[in-house]
Structure formats: C-alpha cells, structure tokens
Length: 173
Image (cartoon, rainbow, N blue to C red; front, side):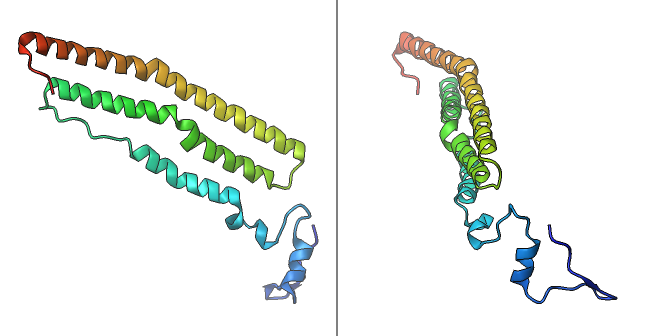
C-alpha cells in the first residue's frame, strides 16, 4: 500500500490535487475501482436482491388463517389438510425459490472476488454441499413429519365420509 498523503499543520488530512491519481496510488493491488465492479452493477447482487424479495413473498403466500373453531369437523379437517399440503409444497420446492437464488448469488459474489481460482472452486463446492444438505433436511421433514399427518387427516376425512353415507346418505361438505 502507498503511504498516506502528507498532513498540513492544523488542517488534518489534505486531499491530493487529483483524486483519480490518489485512487490509483492508494488502492490495494487486488481491488478494483472501475464502475463495472461496483456492487450495484453486478448480476449476483441483483440475484440476491431478487431473492430477498421472492423469499418473504413465497413464505407469506401459502399461509392460511386457522379455521374457525365453530366449523363442522369435516371442514376443519379439510382446512388443516390444505394447510399441511401447502407446507408440504413449500418445503418440497425449497430448492427453486430459496436455495437456488441464494446459492447462485453467493457463488457469483465469490467468483468476482479477487482470490485464487482454487479457493473459488472450493467455496462453490462447500456452498453446493451445504445447500444440498439443507435440501435433504427439508425433504426429510416433508417425508417424516408432514406426509404422515396428511395421510392421517385423509383417513379421518374418509372415515367421516363413510360414516355420513352409512347414517343416511348425507354427504359431508
């Protein structure tokens, strides 16, 4: 790094006569100062910014209000089954709306960094492995937690339908 510019007595730091000259002299050799390398102009920044909008929206959309406690049992069970199916769909597609945009963004950020290519490859591999592990956890949660509950609710609904038909042919709404 180049030394700091001289100080004037009583004035503190004195700017150089030419700022571009100062920037060239006082910029670390591995850093870039061109306008194309600013964070706001990089595609990975746009990907991460878009993910910061899409992720909360995607998390908010499938939320449903809890069913009214005064509803008949069959309607309450159907509402709960719909809620479980929405959660199942959300966790099942987490790779596309959560992991892929964030993974691509952080990998591209590192790809543009002034570090050794081998480090970039290693970083990308670690990110892919970590996001793969997160995907596996989400899919296991669907398989282990949500699908059994959905099957149980479907069974209860089928039992209610059969009971209503046996009692008098009245279909349960």
